Each structure stands twice: as structure tokens, then as C-alpha cells.
Image 1 (cartoon, rainbow, N blue to C red):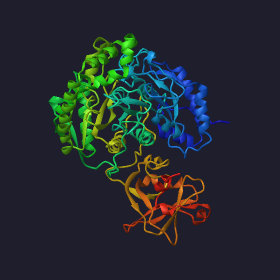
Image 2: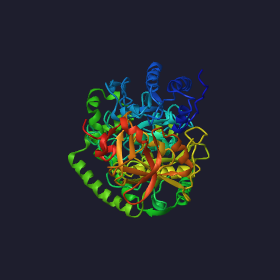
Image 3: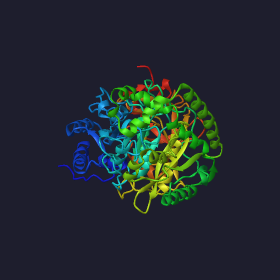
Image 4: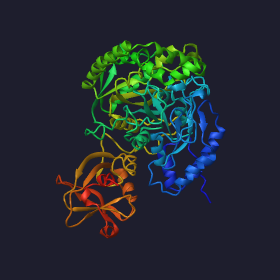
Length: 602
């Protein structure tokens, strides 16, 4: 008999994973309970299409042949913005005349499903991802999760509201001008806009293909980090894909740092004094975490932002829908048509002038990183009611892009974070940004902030189930542990370290005392100390001592923890394998690392 289990309103990943581990919940049980929630909660413009109950149970049943330990996103429900392909459902980009049925899912969606995530459906958006408001769709206005009179933000409106209302654990959006950050701010979520090209855009309807990013909406920085780890992979079929920066990067954020704040005369709140107060409160909170506020010149960023819709990138949007505009202009939403059609008027001379100007602005903006490690801004200066946006659609949208439109033009990475509530109950958000490939550093700072000042999850009053609240970053107590296999960064079990606040310290080799074996299950290596050994590559992680015992208790035989000697003369606790297990295992010492063995030619 199944044990009764009631889904929490906020579906944070740690809570679901614990329920799976404790056998209180199965993926099929999650689907059944979630289906009831989906059927009883008004759509409010969130969904364009959803998978059938039978299809969802099919995904769940396939997972139940595996263990929660095998897949980092085991049984985690997610939503997909409807300009990203999901096999089995149409992709519309919020334009019925444009709709097509893809034969396969987008690259990033395939990775998430392979990691155990369950796709629920396709979410509403501003048509062709053109807008920051969430009102420009023939599938209805997507309303704010906290107050239906207010906008949800766009263009990834449905994705954000689905997470905020507890319909999924996370969602994919896209972000060209702010679409992955503005809805996060308006719905009390974390919104990750990765470095351009870090997440594949194969299978994504382009807005501005040279700038588009697939973005992540999550309840916490911890959840967002786990999704990013799974979704990130170089896709050679994506023309604008870039591998992650190979340069060594500090695994955590420095205890002391400098954060840039625009000079006071360059900050805009559009009359929203509550937003102003919350922003300066966020400045104080970041200072309490070891940051030093530095006033910076924000003008190059503001000028770059204006280029996005007053420059050749509008022509790039125009190229996507040119044939439809010529054939059936009424198929486009009136405001969307007005914005995109302007791209037809731009000349090549206009384009080159804008490209050269952007290079000048980027050079000026880059000087900021000599003064500060990150830049702090509001995500938006204010929020608008739906009727205010409909009265002045382009002006209000322009206001919302004040702090967002420059981000991809200047090649930055960014994360939007919850930062409190106005007296009327509407959320406010801040954004941290830094140069491209600073994604892990921004997430590390976001998690530190999250632990120091936990925020509620979406519309729920709950806080994250596993924020490592007992960890003190001012007086940390860590245990070092060496890992050599499935717990390595980017590997399937790495989340067992990161979920507990683990931080990568260094990659190093052992003393030449060990043999490495591929165990019979093909999923794990075994490190055995014996004669004729070699130097094997390992990662050394710091794990909070309060979480170390729980981590060790989950290690299955024949693996265990012992002392591992490193080639720098130190020794740390780390994974070792009982010698008997090597008798039926393949000796892979010649590869000197588990990564190299997995990367061997088949």
C-alpha cells in the first residue's frame, strides 16, 4: 500500500529528492498528484499545451526502473517555453500560423530528460520572444503569480509563473533582452541567464540568434545550479555554441569582494520608491556578506541597451519572420509586428555603424571589471499593471529593459535573485552580472546570500528544504574529501556534494601508489592501493563537516573512505575500493583518470 504523500506547494528539488529517497513518493505518484493540481488550478495564461496524463505516466514509469541515486534530476517536473522544441507537442512561439511539430526535442531538453527530469508542457510567451511584459500572446495574457492585475514579465512569462505556482520545479526560458530575468523578479524566483553559447540553442526558435540564450527559472540558486550542471554541454550543431571557459576558476566566491553599483544619478526606479528602498537594502545585505560597494559609471551599459531595439539586431528578428510578414502580416500580434517590421528599414551602413559603436561601448564597459568583481543592479526599476502596459506597450516595455537589454550585447553572464517584497505584496528582484563564463562564481555568491538570508519559494511561504542553514560562512568547518569517479564535477553524482554545500578546491594527482579499475557495473571506478601503482587524477572537495557523515553513509560497497596520498605531499580522506572488487573489474590505470577513460574512442 502506497504511503500517503502530499506534494508541497513549492516543488524544490531537495524536498522531492528526499521524498524519493525515503520511498514516500514515486515518479508515477508525483505525476498523479501533479495532474490533479494542474487540473484544479486556473490556467491564467500559463500553458499553451501540455503532455497527456498517459504520456506523463510513461515518462514516470521509465524512471521507476532506475534508482534516484542514478540520475541527478530523477523525477523532477519541468516546463518548457514554447519557442523550445519538445517532441510530441507543437512549437508555436505564440503564433498559431507559425506552429510546427518537431521530430525531436531541443538539445538542452534532451539532456534534462536523460538526467531524469519529467517534461510537463509548453508555456506561454510574448510572441516570438519579443517583449518583457507577458501580454503579447494570442493564447492569453499570463498574469502575475502574486496579483493577477499585474504583469508576469516576459517574454518567458508562462515558464516563470509555472514555477512560482508550484506546477513544476524549474522551467526553461530564453533570454535575449531580459526574458529570463524580468519574469523571475516579478514572481519571486531565481533566473539564470548563462553566458552566451553555454547552453545549446539547437531546437530553439531564434529571436536574435547571435544573442539568444536558453535561461533557467528555479526556486533557489541551489536548484538552478543543479539544472545548469546538467543542461550545460557543448553542441557542435549550434552555430553560436561556446565551450565553457577552460581557464582555472576559483570554485567559490571570495570571502571579500567588490561589487559595482551604478552612480545614483544613473539609477532609475520610474517613481517606485518601494523598489528604491529594497534595492538599497540589498546593497547593505551584500556588504554584510563581505562585499564592498563601489560606485561605477553605468552610461556605457545604458547606451549599449538602446542599440538592441534601435540597431541592426531588430533586423535579425525581422529575418526570422520576414516571409510571414510578407504573406500574412495579421498573423503577428500588432505590437510585435510594429517592433519587428522596423527591421526592414535598416541599411548595411546602419548595421556597421552600430557594430563599431558597440565595440567602443564594450571596451568602456570592460573597464568596470578592474574596479569590481560583479555588478549589482535592480532587475527592473518597477513593475506595471496590465492596463498600464496595454495603454503604453512600447514605452513600458522600454522601462523594463533599462537594466537588462545590454547584457547579451556586452557578453555578460547574469543571475536574477529575489530581494524582498513591496508593501503591496509584489516581489522585487536584483541582478548580479559579471563577464562571460562567470556563471559558477555568480551561483556561488547567490548561494552564499541565500543561506545568509533565505527567501520564500515562489508563492509559497516555505523556505528551501536543504539550504545548509547550519553552515557558517564566517566560521566554516569543512572536511576535505578526494573523489575520482561519479562524484567528479559534471558527473552524475556530483550533486551529492553540491547539494550539501560542497566546494571544489583543486584538481590534483595522487602519489604513484594506486591502480584504477572500472567496476563491473560500468558506472564507477575503484581506486585500489597496491604495488605497481600510478599517479591518478582526483578532485579534492571541501564538504561541511555537519554534512560529511550523511555523505559517507550513502557510499555503497565495495567503495569506502580511507586516506589518499597526494603528489603534493599531503593526504586527505577519499574514495578507495576494497581489493576483492578488482578481481572482476577492468584495469584502466593506463588512462590515469576516470574522465580520460570515459572519453576514450569507442
